[in-house]
Image 1 (cartoon, rainbow, N blue to C red):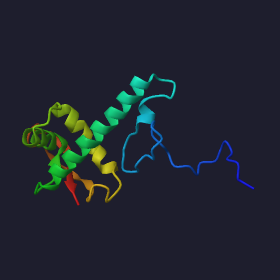
Image 2 (tube, helix red, strand yellow):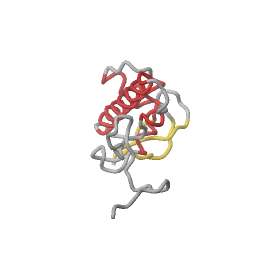
Image 3 (cartoon, rainbow, N blue to C red):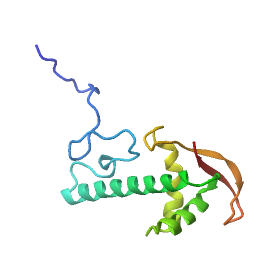
Image 4 (cartoon, rainbow, N blue to C red):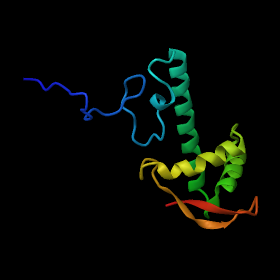
Length: 133
C-alpha cells in the first residue's frame, strides 16, 4: 500500500520554479519573488535576480576573505567595487554585506561574522564591522 501525502505533509524538500531542489545556502529563491500564476517571463526574471544576488554575495565574501582586518559594510562596498570592478552601486553592495552572515557555515568555505563596532574610515560614523572566520 502506498502512502498518500496529506495536505500537511512537509517531508518534500522545497523546489524552485523549475522543479529543482533549492540549495540551503541560497538566501532567497525565485518562488518568493514570483507566484505560480505570474507570467513565465516574471518567473524567469525572478530566477535571474536570485542568480545575480548569489553571485554578488560570493564575490563580496571571497574579496572580504582576503582582507587582513574587520571592515565596515561601506568600506567593504567601496573596496570590492573598486578592486573587483563591479557594476553595482556602492549602496547596493553595502546593503548585501549583512546578508553574508546568513549563509550556512561552510557553504562559502568560511563564515562571515559581525566583528564588533568602530568608526568607519569612509563616513566617520560608528558602524558594525564584518570579518571572515
